[in-house]
Image 1 (cartoon, rainbow, N blue to C red):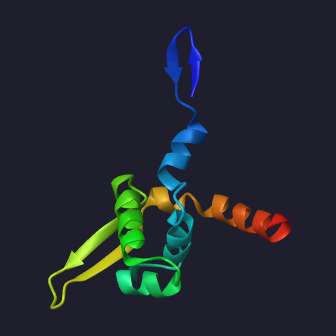
Image 2 (cartoon, rainbow, N blue to C red):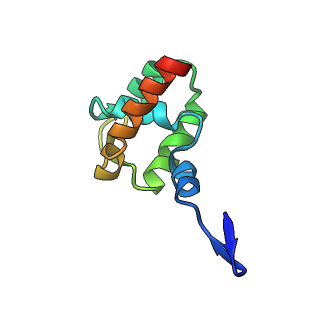
Length: 105
């Protein structure tokens, strides 16, 4: 963050990274671009993520309005995750990151 006359100014990149900069965030978001997913489906599609890391990532993204969590009263309980409009707005950025990774990664 920058200081201007002693006033702390937040950087928009820093704000974005606070929301989507977690180790697993973009992989979770990428999976949700294909549609609503359940916890188990997300875990199978991101094999190296632990259940705790997935739970933490989903909670973080939900708390920042990137995705929604819907619970259904079934036995066992069914929980589905869906991207919000805010989450879908990351589509272009994700595509550019994919191109960058293909070229430079």
